[in-house]
Length: 94
Image (cartoon, rainbow, N blue to C red; front, top):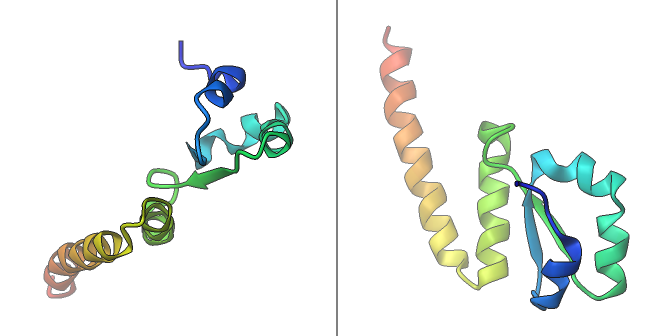
């Protein structure tokens, strides 16, 4: 149904819980950060949708750090920058 069951998540014993930034207000209001902190589960937020031009790179770097794939994250960031440049270079000539 789209709801997040914190108790069920904790039983899975995750190293970290990753949520999209659009869930931040709801998780703060529900006290998830404090509840998860008590059992040693950090909660981090990523943003690929709300402000993608601003937050995709830091979100990818965070994911790379969390999964020990920093090089892959940097590869994606470079690929994304090159693809964006293809579009902006064409638009600059219009």
